[in-house]
Length: 239
Image 1: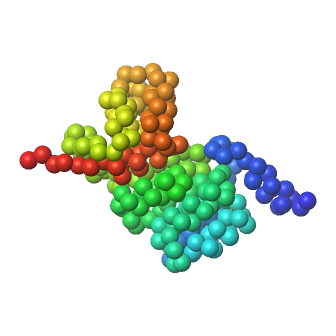
Image 2: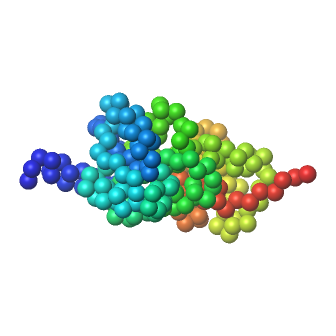
Image 3: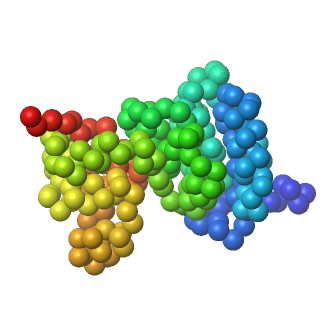
């Protein structure tokens, strides 16, 4: 077996979700605009932490490139020339669950965010993001983390913190008061340690609460729980 083939075989055997902080992250950039792909590629290539292994502008092209190059992270737009980046994300994550997807898009709406996360994306950021922040986002997702752009969730979270919300979803209605508070902090991007410090709970206790929340919402990841909250919360403004 040639060296390059051995490298790809070893990469394919990587355990999903394991950290890859000790080597360069292999990244594929998917966007229907060539100028955007060029900009993201240049930004990533200027960093020692990343290697851009493929680019694509459509769904079919993205899936084929993922099969060929097996990247660690796919930076994906929501709208592609032959379909949806959400569709491409779902296909890639179903076939290669070890590949992480970061949505980089202009769509700042709850529907697109929710659909992306439920398709398997680990992060959702807007194209207005600063270069340094995008590099951090790719690194976070590549190392098994998740994040949601604060611009997308800010309005939701602001109203939640003011208590101007009404849970009409049956799953959210299962949450206890403490679980609801913890879910809001998860949606705000807090770690278990930060949540514990804010609520004066042991980190292990917070971890148990998070497991219970995921179970009650029937989701597998923190990002999915945050997206579920954003999607299924209805707001009532007081006069």
